[in-house]
Length: 100
Image (cartoon, rainbow, N blue to C red):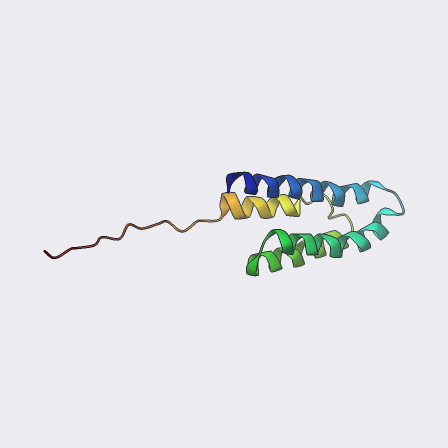
């Protein structure tokens, strides 16, 4: 499990870098964002399942499609939300009484 979460982080950093590189290419960069935005949204929804993954895929699509927002590391922020900031439910011990 621990290894899997760091694989997600590495993938996310790579996808963030791809999104940022398009901003560095003059003239063609904004057109590359039109191609990259739906691909990034698809990758996000595959990496993170459920409602949170769907919301993140919409956010990454909007972030990639809007000009000058490519510097936002959306994939990395989603990883941080999922594995660092989000409160994980605590396991509560269950007390069982046995009648003898």
